[in-house]
Image (cartoon, rainbow, N blue to C red; front, side, top):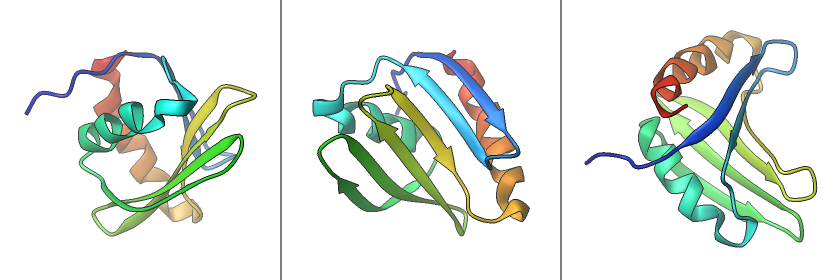
Length: 101
């Protein structure tokens, strides 16, 4: 199945252990952005959390846990890992996303 998704930019940040993602993201319909993103990255959605101004999903990629975060007020979306050793997973996922920019 082809994923239809358009991103404006991606940016790796080793210090923050994160991969920022810019695109057309609607807070009220976050799943319409996040589901195709997870599919494009071949990630499994393990958990979904949300609050007044934030979405946070726990994803899994080949045994590595990733957090997909979106904050409404800053219009900021990013993937993050908790361990420095897992940053290489974000580097690999960034290569998968380049075709959507």
